[in-house]
Length: 440
Image 1 (cartoon, rainbow, N blue to C red):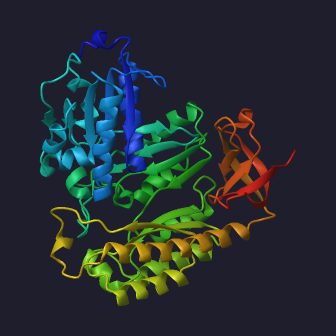
Image 2: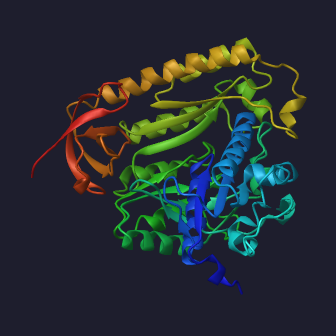
Image 3: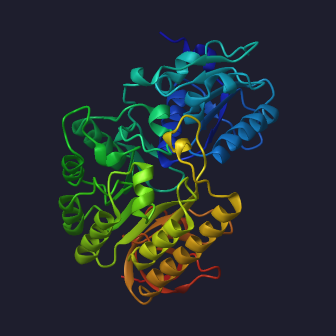
């Protein structure tokens, strides 16, 4: 039994790096600490506790984690510092040796963070608590409200795919999930708290069901029945796990939005094989075609990695041509970063940093053109937009069902409302469409 009396009137600051799943988990940690009497530090206030949830998807992410740890230690002298997340799991000893760090928690320990705070006295040296990969088995529920209007519902964790370039399975363990019944109950609770939109998050959400013998399609159908939730969005889902029945269901669902995020990673079949991906470009193209047949105006975001080992100039040109022909909305472009212990390091052909940058720029320009064209063809339409709270002096914004960002003059009384808005023209920097609210 934890004596929470020592936590009364203590303050905490939270910093999250990486994916939506990390943000969801940090929010859940924050809720747990608040229930124990620890309030969130105000801006500029020196905190008693620093919680840092890290990412390790690239070498740049590792470096940023270290920088953030050093910065928070400086900004909050004497604070009890806890580091968790993927970087903490993969490099626990290195993190524990960073000056000012008290406790390092791995993937299995993160959910029990409160138990590791002790009496909040600083340690003479950092203490590391992690579990080997084969022992990372538990699923920690998380349904948290973001800074905006939407909730993030964690439905799955871990990954069994072991792609040649990726360390995530080593950082988060094998694929596992909560039960459909428990996730439906969390969605109902989000609705009671005023949530109108839920994003389904996880590491490999299409692989849902390994723990419970259920399927992701079963989950989607069950969540669709929850009253009060107006919108669901499916975060990144592997193309080989995005079944035709899921696509067809989303097409006819009132609650699941016409919005997909599908990792391609490369448009070259040769590179896909080197990556140990579980599909080829033909399968990927067929999924895009199926979506367009049933939902012509769906937003389709695609992840692409450039400069992986083995991506020759010829392979990249093949990939570029393939992506250029795809009817997708936006590209999320990442430069390949070598990760210790991955099989990709055995591939001989190495792409220079300069060449990675050039390839990234070409794909980013292609992405901008595709997104601009997608937005432009919706100008003049009336769409239902879920509006979000705006910062002082900033326009209010929200998103259409198919994820077009829309801006209107600030009126925070409209926060978390879904209103009909006419899409007029691009804003100054071309990142959103300006809209006009239609009066009933």
